Length: 63
Image (cartoon, rainbow, N blue to C red):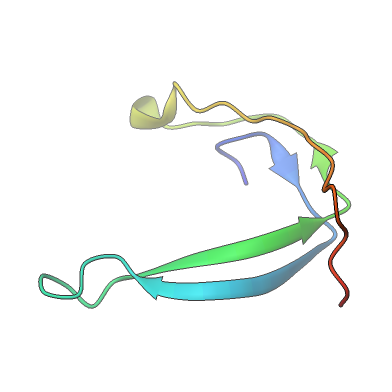
């Protein structure tokens, strides 16, 4: 994720959802990233205000 300055060892797709059913066929995809590591952020001009926050899951997922 060059915008946030994070890399992950593995990605698991959790969910796909339509963002606007009546206007486009675009999907939003939600991933679970494991073993995150900090790297150099390289946001584009419109992504300068992105922020990331680290938190622990209260109840772990069983995968």
